[in-house]
Amino acid sequence: MAVPPDLADPPDLQVDFEQVFTAHFTEIHRYIARRLSDDVADDLAAEVFLAACRGGYDAARGGVRPWLYGIATHLIARHRRTEIRKWKALSRTAERAEHDPEDAVLTRVTADRLTGKLAGALAGLNRGDRDGLLLSALCDLSHAEVAAALGIPAGTVASRLHRARKQLRKALGDVNRWRRPMDELSLLARALPDAPPPSPEVVERARLRLAAARREQGPPARARRRGPAWGWTLGAAATTIAVVLAIVTLVANMTPAPAPVLVPEGGNSALLQLADRVAKLPDERGAYWRRPLLNDALIRVRAGNQAFNVLFSSRIDLWQPRDPRDPVQAEQWQQFVRPATEADERAWRAAGSPGTVQRVCTPGTRAGDCAKLRLRSKPTQCVYTRAVEPDGVLGDSRIGELTLADLAELPGDAGQLREKLRAYWKILRDKEPGYSFEKFLATSTALLELPVKPSVRAAALRLLAGLPTTRVRGTITDPLGRPGIAVTFRESEGFTAEFGADDEVAQRYTTILDPRTGAVLAEHAAIADESTDGLAKGTFMTYQAWAPEAGWTGERPQRPRDCRLSARPLP
Image (cartoon, rainbow, N blue to C red):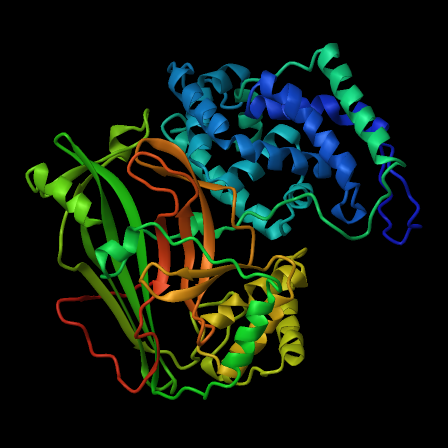
């Protein structure tokens, strides 16, 4: 079915869902079956068209195929454990026979032999990268169509595919040792088990369900210009959190996060009230802006017959001068690896207080990927950089390549700040076509982390409060024990991570704001959404946080002792 591309068409344009079903049910069913199973696809494919019928076609999403594949991909995410286990099982059981050097990499025979390696690589990808890769490989969608299906910029699709293909090449490295050119997408499409078309009975049953839903709904759905879009942004933060940490109270670090006290009526009005308070704060003074970034990661380990959790930690401390003639200094070091709580310490002592522990990994993990950890209580591996940077450009380029002087000139009025941000967006848009201004506005959360005036931070809070993706979750205690406001600015649920022997633990992400200053206290705070062995629901699994000494200071950085000067810039 052709969908009129002109959004200026009359609003009475109608979508024939019977025609859409006839044209696309089989391919949607096969896509789901290849990622999950035939049995699951029988019901889930029908759900795709029921959801499409209820939601109505949004002409702004582009073609019908990407729209349907976006719905299907979102529904598949609810079965993430089933999919991961399928790829891992296929990785263990697929044929790994050696092949002759004269074989062509893209032949059907070689692709069959590589199934296990490719399936293992798929299991190791994060959800966003895996979705983009399989939509491209199995569905033959272009970058633009994948972007429409997932509701993300085309540039983000390109980045995800680049990362995913890099992982595939890494997995095939020993096989492709002759360095022949390969098309990973074609290879993936050939190697992964195909799925037969649905039986006539399955098609008819789904058709009847759709017909019943349409009768309940009434007249055919009209094509919409605006409204809920099928496609879900997958926050990249889930895949970039560093495994680093700061010295903080152990019990406070990894105890379950208190359930937020939800803001009653008003929702995002809590951000507007916060903005009013922040706007009254005085400007901060100091020769240096200091950003001590703390991060935590909880790891399941075993020693003897005892299993317990440890914290793996490091820290990076940035000193940015107000005067560009002064040096910029950054220090980074690993702080410790030690039992996470008092209960974990008791288990460690019961095991004989070993200096080395074995990481607990998911079944089937290669021994080389499940390394032992050496416990330590003192900082190690310290490196630092120190140099004058005359241009004064900050390392955080989410909004643009800005200096402290640029930040000082930002307006404190929300409307004026919006237009200033629009100018920065236009510069980025030229480098990343398809990047909408609305999505760019969500990155203005960076202003809550950068050294801007309180009035600018207040204006940014007002802009963020008006975005449809912003949700105030309520009050919460951050991982360092500080009271805060839990807010999400992007898609924050539906993510998973490995923990111990569990290959897929559901987790959600949140940002925690200081209720006094509006600045970020903790970011990318991953909270377990379910319990598993050694992990209680609500526990902070990983996070990035700003230490209490963050902000403007009259102190100046001193060269650290016992620390190696690095020629490479630190993160």
